[in-house]
Amino acid sequence: MKKLFKKWWFWLIIIFLIVGFLNVSNNNSNMINVSSSNQEKITFLSGTNGKEFFQILCNIANIEAPEGTIVGDSIDYVASNLDYGIEIETNKKNEINWISIYTLSKNNYENFFLAIARLEYNGSDKAKCFNWIKENLGKESIIKIGDANLKLCNGTSGLPILTLYTDGNENYQKEQIDKISK
Image 1 (cartoon, rainbow, N blue to C red):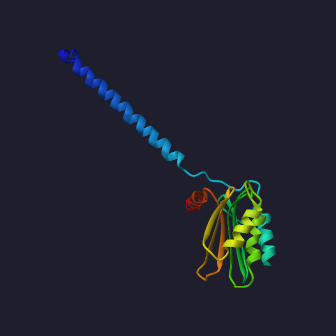
Image 2: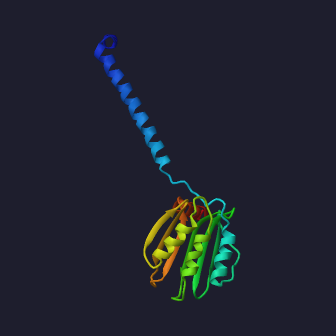
Image 3: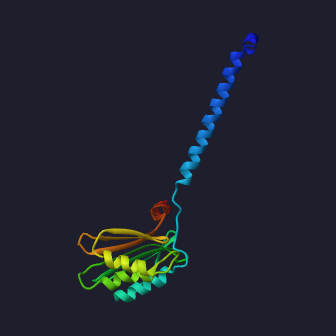
């Protein structure tokens, strides 16, 4: 065995094994960093007040505005009548994460949908939002304005649905479901 330690090729093999082990170890730590950095950050529209905005939408739709319901870390505001439906999700500080508004009748609903343009948040652009809704109401369309994503689509009845959501909303929803399920 002593003769083996004196051979040059033995030490070369040892060096290759050590370098290979270090490379594998370094690659594994890089994989961990990449996967964690790909996680979408959960965001809310800072400076918004979901409760107040819910009351504004209810007023426009002529719906009585009930109190929000605390579900996990969220407050959900939900109301509807024969013509309109409103759903807003906020965090406990009432910062908006998600809004869905829809019409249940073919009555004039344009002003109801255009009310979303009133919402002020980081990067909001009232004119851009107003024009986008006006041009796309009744069509399938998605746009990002500032920190909010807006999506217009038609429901099964063929009537429009407008959804506003933040980046990370899907992860937040999953997190809340997991907390409630436990």
